[in-house]
Length: 170
Image 1 (cartoon, rainbow, N blue to C red):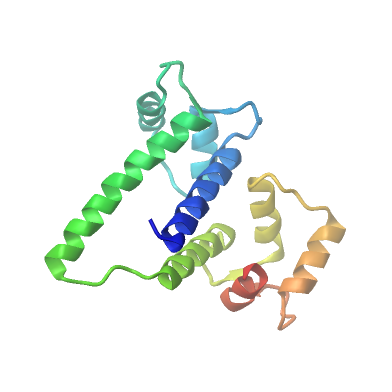
Image 2 (image 1 turned 180 degrees about the vertical axis):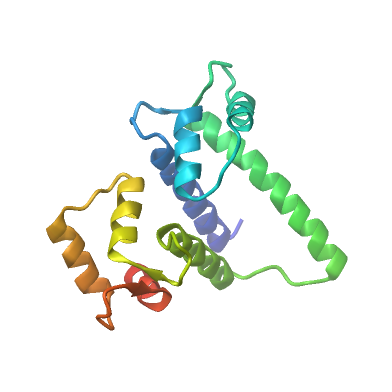
């Protein structure tokens, strides 16, 4: 495995560990069906409770309705392997080239922007920023919110557009 593949794998695992930490709202090292449902609803994804419970049951080796970090990583790994297998099948069928690393970063940034841009209008407002930061467990006080907006809002229109968002993160 070359250094780019190793770096990509490490980044992927760090992202998964961060995702687990975001799901584990009470920081007890386990994710419940309620914590998963809370995060999905905050992302605007509505899933029936019985499906959430089925997903948790599938991922939990102990059958106790809780997912620890190792189970979460294995579960997501299986999902990613299935997705990768499907993508390879689609690529071989269409003879397309695999997406390069820049495309992956762009996709990640767009997905992150959409989490913050709750109404989908292409801008992150002050309220959306505050809500998103609370959702990821990093609530901001008024001074911190003002400071972040002052740094990110380059055109000083009171909201953050996609370009400003990417400059803040890159």
